Structure formats: structure tokens, C-alpha cells
Length: 140
Image (cartoon, rainbow, N blue to C red; front, side, top):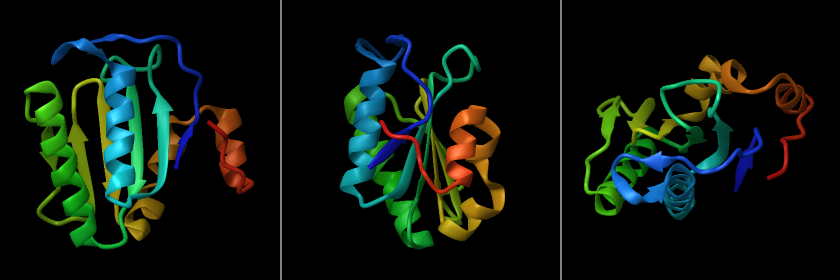
């Protein structure tokens, strides 16, 4: 299940598909991650905070092999959806794979690598971060 750590502010147009909003692409990304058994999925709304994307998704796979498979399947699904192949970094090692779909940036980690980098802490609002520290993830 995903955890949304920022309120949505409305859809933005996606360059790859004139009929798809960044929120619709986010929904497809989350569905793909769920289908491939990604764990600890967190979404971070970047609208108004960064020009690089509207959403960031962080998830974990249990092994380097699963991390690579999750990333590959997601890239294939995004290509079918938008007609463009997303940019992928890190798939060869499988420790941390970044999938850039333009409006949605996805990070898939092995759990120990995710814990080391703690990427969520850089981007989460302070109130959501305190809930993560307390062990109570914010609800959708």
C-alpha cells in the first residue's frame, strides 16, 4: 500500500500523453509497484516544491534481482502507457534503481540501501517526517 505524505493540489498535464495527468501516471506507477510486490511504498507530492517532477515514489524490493525486475516491468508498462521509454539508472547493480517518467520519479531500493540513504527524510514535510520517526506512517 502506498503512503501519501503531501496533499494533492490538482493534476498537471503530462508531456508524454496529452490525455494523462501526472496523477494518472502516479496511479499507474503505484499499481505496477503493487503488482510486482514492491514493499513500503511511499509517495511524495513535489508540486510547488521542485520543478523536476510532480511526484516522487520510493519503494523497496527484497533483493537486487527483485529491484531490477520491478524497475524493468515499470519501465515497460510506462512505455506502453505513454509511448516513451523512461530513463533508468542503476538497474545493473540492483541496489538502487531510479526510473524517471518525467512527472513521476521512482526510486526502488534494497531495504538496507534505502535505510542507509533515507531519501524520504530529504523530501518529506516536517509533520510527515515526525510520524515516520514515531513509526506511524501518514494515511492516504
